[in-house]
Image 1: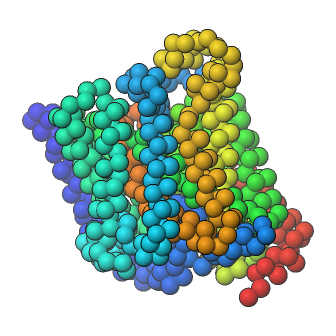
Image 2: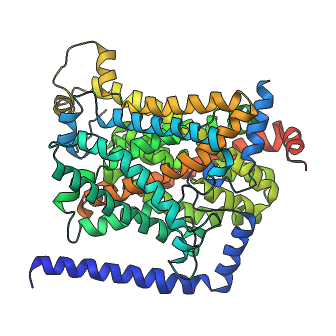
Image 3: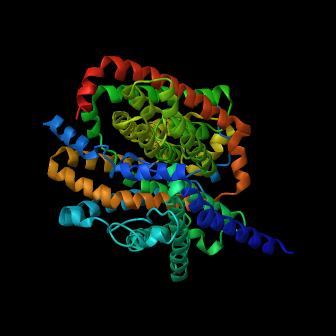
Length: 76
Length: 482
């Protein structure tokens, strides 16, 4: 088997592994009671644990608006 | 200091092709500033004209639980595929002239190859965002950047990145462009409202931890690459992935060094997000002190929010507020690192540094400041300009603050996310797995992260107890009162 074929097979196998993980294993895990409760709680509170920067948590009652208003008042 | 022994060609903005091109005024940095500030100004004009009607125009694949298709078809503001396509399309249209200018050939076939490359990179970025949207993945804070990197690495290390799409694979340009847009989100005005307690935890402890960790890693652990040490230190002490990206671009770190830093950060963040609230409850730490402690130590903003919420409503508010101030530090850190690095390279007279210097510029005339300026990553000025524009607008009145909120929240933030995602796909496409191994430095990077984070936890805890538990306790309780 040529190296090109091996490399293509390696990519295909990796894609298959990712597809199984994301389309079957992770959805199954998200149905587990403990995980489901944690996800529900985050959704209810509007928390996105994967937010990178503070502006990524706008939906959350962390008061970005409140802080902006305070900052403006403070400057007056 | 010892020089970094890595070949200069592997560093940010220093591929041989880019180095030649950076002699001209339309370098990657200049394009990043033009595109970033141009998009910000366009966003402000659009927000001023249409206001809140902008909601949902631009977007990204949403969250999903059972089927990945949900992330492209189900959204509050309509199907996410439409808003994703518009966001990515805007970036592609804006990027094409820059990519063409930076290419060595400028023909119609080059343009076609660049457009094709952008389509492939865009599809991979979309897939990365879909992967990051899965409920379990999202819950444990594994952001899209890690999946973008993984997809790129998979292709480059199996079938290889096709030659025809390499012109569109410019991770550094997308990162710098994204960082200029991120500058618009750094509002210094927030510091004024949050006052001394948050600043003491964020702005006193963070620089101490950053500098100490850098010295520890470089001098005591003897990690050869100072750029790797500073990227890990900033990532761990400031705000995770965003700080790692900004610092890596500021000190021209290698792509694999940035990849290692964000990998470490995400693994520890997922652990600390669960472990810290549990430890606080076990130790019966006061919720206000606990919130400040969490806010000052956990890397990523989302994880801080989640961990704070696990302690309670007051802890969550304090944690996210402290993190918000620490996030603002990203601009100052990136600026300081870029100035220090430019000056350090100028004074480094080792053969390796001189060889690198000869690649950067063959004109060694001029004074110290002239050379520092030549080495200074110019995109940092775009970052600072964007931050100053939005901060001044926000402080000039509520109506202007609202325009800035819409422009950054609905427009630049979304585009910045796409740009970072594209950048990490490109970094993956340009990186060989074997190149990642030296960046691990035989486990020293892990040791550096653990030691640095331990110091961070210790100092932040002491400062949180002093400031939030004693000095300003009454004022904070008043602020937190419903």
